[in-house]
Image (cartoon, rainbow, N blue to C red; front, side, top):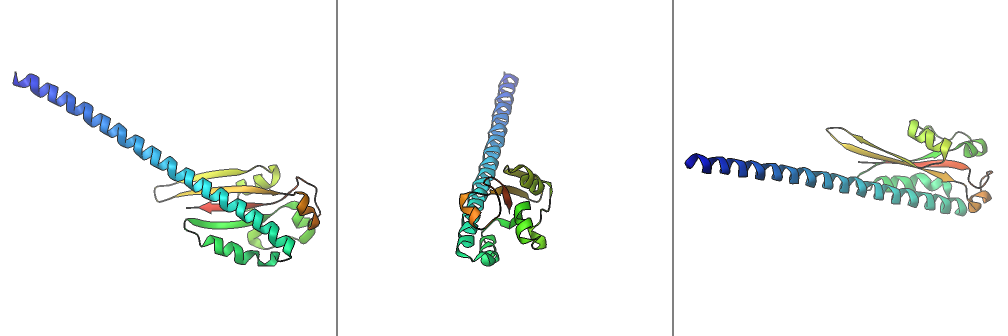
Length: 162
């Protein structure tokens, strides 16, 4: 009789342990997805803020002050880097610009060519980095400052989050 109780105890304990491990794995996955989605939302919000602010700086004739603005945004928690990349129409009109205004990797080059937003998640044991690159397309208001057509890719905004 004792062995029957012991076998039932072992089976019930095993089932409870397996259920506990499954619940922990689900909790970990949900927490991970929540953190990644939060980083994506924050990066997209920052990118759209940069785009809007750059447009305002251009209209006000203060575009040379963009580095001060970008540096202040980089001081935000978990923001590793913010970079403005010049597109072909801007290069033709204003020149190459500084070295850090050139595309540094394939994702940035692809966004400049396709005009489509791209993002990438890089994971390692030490850290997780999320990078989003959004195109800066010419709109009617941009034509006052730029020699381009509506829809041309003037550049891109690249943000890397920790």
